Image 1 (tube, rainbow, N blue to C red):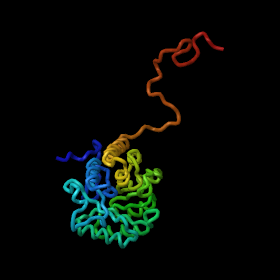
Image 2: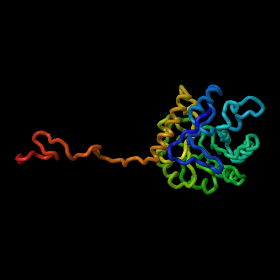
Image 3: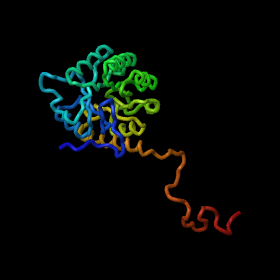
Image 4: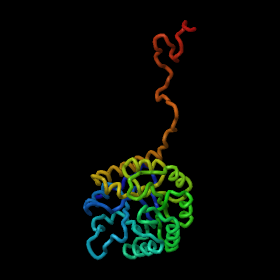
Length: 279
């Protein structure tokens, strides 16, 4: 029997329309050595939602879907490999017909070299998909202005990149991520560039609502162990954010009271000159 999803005590589920998740870690299904390894890593991560490129799904024979517990895990079809709005919209419609999936990750890339999002095409495709009753998680640049435009278009979540896809560089622009979250009314999910567990913790400590990653797990020497590390990292980062960190200070501050200390020989308990001594 599969254990219930693990979350931070007292935390509310993350919701997109009718979809609700206790785990705030979303993982991909690509780049693994085998489908069996992918399955083991997905289970170790504790995720309740995996993203899969629509073009990788073979509905006519054995596929990666055969290695996922679809009674427990929600599929998040994505438009990876799309470089224009029209193709991305058509891909989402195919996913809805083939998989009965209305929750989609929109990804429209500008070119094959940088793999950065195309902001204009992304916004165009987002508007079309929202009008077609999709719940859209929109992958985009770490641009606070564009994030608001996508929210205005009606997306279910904005997914600013932490760093370029597959780079493993972590959160390159935490200030922008923090600004996006502060101004948003929809969930903010950091997507792309996460390389290790500390990157996940840092992302959550910025106050964001979720993290989506793939290569950081799949390209590790031990993907299953890394998936487990990512699971612990999101829980730690989210709990730290909810707990509220102490203020940062430029100077030291003692953790024990200064009053009641034993006076050093020749000095008062407050550190001054002993009685009877002086200039």
